[in-house]
Image 1 (cartoon, rainbow, N blue to C red):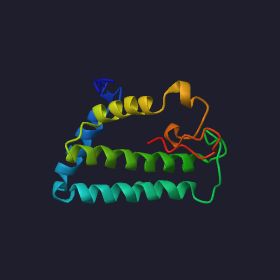
Image 2 (spheres, rainbow, N blue to C red; image 1 turned 30 degrees about the horizontal axis):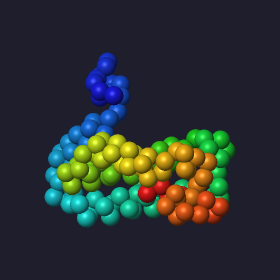
Image 3 (cartoon, rainbow, N blue to C red; image 1 turned 180 degrees about the horizontal axis):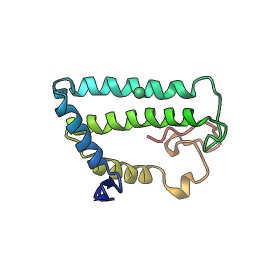
Image 4 (cartoon, rainbow, N blue to C red; image 1 turned 90 degrees about the vertical axis):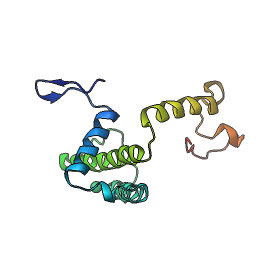
Length: 139
Ligand SMILES: [Mg+2]
């Protein structure tokens, strides 16, 4: 993913592209003064709440959301994007390289949850009880 322009359109999206667009957006509006780590975190949590509201009271829904109306999926895309964009902005303002941090975390998770011990099981390896039916938080 390069974020390079082709025919005036972005042909790929990267975290760096989103970071730069969020920075430009804030600068153009003189909103940088509001983008403190705490404010951004609270905004992120608020957007997670808005995302949760979409699923609230629906019960479990099948993958791909085949029964959802198009406008519901558009709304879902908007709220997912709000969460992503605030996460990217928060990371940038905190000086965290989210690309590197996310890749490192995947590697750490792979060590924490070795395939030979965790395959097909939703419990945490560290919990020890392989017969337990508790869900895996993945942290
Ligand atoms: Mg929102």
